[in-house]
View 1 (cartoon, rainbow, N blue to C red):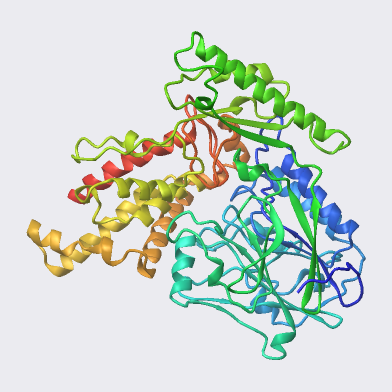
View 2 (view 1 turned 90 degrees about the vertical axis):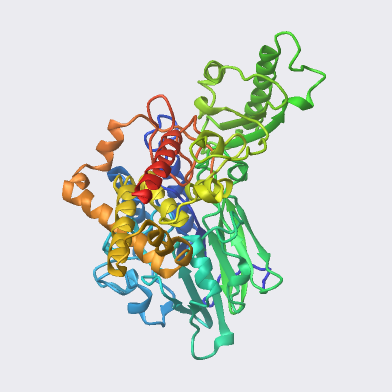
Amino acid sequence: LFFAEALDDEDTFKILIATDVHLGYLEKDAIRCNDSYNTLNEILKCAKTNQVDFILLGGDLFHENKPSRRCLHSCITMLRQYCMGDSPIRFNILSDQTVNFNTTQFPWVNYQDENLNISIPVFSIHGNHDDPTGAEGLCALDLLSASGLVNHFGHSHSVERIEISPILLQKGSTKLALYGLGSIPDERLYRMFVNNQVTMLRPKEDQDKWFNLFTIHQNRSKHGPTNYIPEQFLDDFLDLVVWGHEHECLIAPTRNEQQLFYVTQPGSSVATSLSPGEATKKHIGLLRVKGRKMNLHKIPLKTVRQFFIQDVVLGDYQDLFTPDTPHATKKVEEFCYAKVTEMLEEAERERLGCPLTPEKPLIRLRVDYSGGFETFNTSRFSQRFVDRVANPKDIIHFLRRREQKEDIKDEVNVDYGKLIKTAAVEGLRVEDLVKQYFEAAEQKVQLSLLTEQGMGKAIQEFVDKDEKDAIEELITYQLEKTQRHLQARGVTTEQDIDAEVLFRDSKKNTTEEENEIREAMNRARAHRLERGDNALDADILDELAEPMDSDEGSVPFPAPTRGRGRGSRGRGGRGRGRGEDCKLMFSKFIEECRCDTRQ
């Protein structure tokens, strides 16, 4: 499948591959505000320097679902600067473009528009950060698509069945089938694959002569029983899969021995969490395809801020201190100071000769203080490095090994603080938190009316997209639906009501549940629009809030002492992080749901 020589001729596609740019991440931060913009500029400049045929983006071009004016302006400016020009396009599109580009009133590739002068086409799917929302199902990529700067593809409108129709490209004798699938909730897509509701269409003629390239934006690593997409679900006729959403850079193609295709995971181009996966050196890929063979050359990104992370277990340094050592906390603090200094010195050595690399690195020291050690004042500790690191507020992260959960004996005496532990768990997601609660709770504490998926979605909409009515509308919608059902059945006694309300188990993980959740979320958005909340610009809202701190995590749920992580778009609160607010909201939500269900 591979060819060794990187020769450029009239039969070779040259494709620049990148995923998870997260443009606009921490744009309000005094130090890191320009990181994502500088790296996108480097990516586009690299594409122009290498004279690629097109750019392929694997989702999450934007960090926010509703990008700020500055973010959109910068993106449009860079795309216009690097992707418009007189250079000829040397490949043709053979497929039905009205099917490939079905999200715009201009259903054709931008370089064929007589009113535009495109030199480097950009093809992109959407991610979970910039996914379509609202009744119209629009996302930020659709703005770029309507303006002729980006070709948005891979948007599935149906929740019943997905048909992925490829963009068929030909350059000389090389035929390339480009498949794409924008981000879909993992549980839903997992279920659709299991039920054979996902179909990848193939060209009718010469199927064996096409190089099949698939771009996807889903969980690749397993976060739960169905909260990821196994590689084995994908069709075996594929040649290469470009996997977005995962931020760790594993760009070298790895072979799936069962399906016999290769997978490349470019990773993110900016660190959006202080976790080990983000510390891997960032790269983009220059893919060459000729016939049925390929060559992938990885290109290191020079404008990415350095990130060093280290774990220490205090119990492993008995020769230096123990919990009973006099002034043990002070000695632990000096020990951590030495570790951070070592990482700073390493960063300075690596930065020599790299003028494009930002001066201040990201530093994270994760300290396991299990065994009786005490924590020290991290704010005072951070002041010693305020002029040397880019994240002075959260250099130290204390954690302890998870303790055994206590048995829950009484519904009235449920301690939500103990149920929702995050001592050593980083990257906790909203839906994980909901599932964690119900896994820990006994049967009599379970809800019979609402579902874990609906609750998780409602809280996620509240956290990620600031839909303040999402939780209330989900409860109201389910109550109204249940009341109509009971009235239609003529139920009057309490025993009959308990027998009739069997919604939760019967409709769990079904299309009916998906539709109900979507209807409730649409009602919440409609109420927001009626109030005129959308008139407030995102920039104004940001200015009213306090700055967001960086934090741990892969998608939306952080530790309580900081702001949100990779999957969040929020701002820190006064006196506690937004994660703590969300946990309190979740606890109140449980109680409200239980009270409403009894009524």
